[in-house]
Length: 61
Image (cartoon, rainbow, N blue to C red):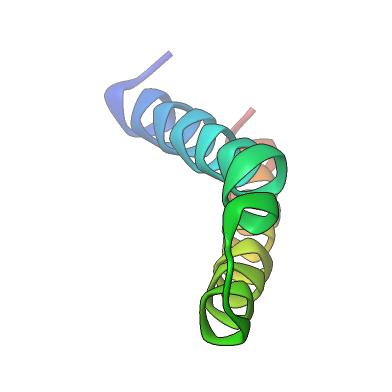
């Protein structure tokens, strides 16, 4: 595996971990509407990042 593919895979893991924390903790712990909206937006962003990285990785294997 070349370094480029490895970097994509490591980044996907980091994004997935972040998404899991947002879903498991941050959304539930947000105590105001602005924070809930922020974490909801971040969740959508992370989902998109994971999907984009998955597509890129599949193109390299």
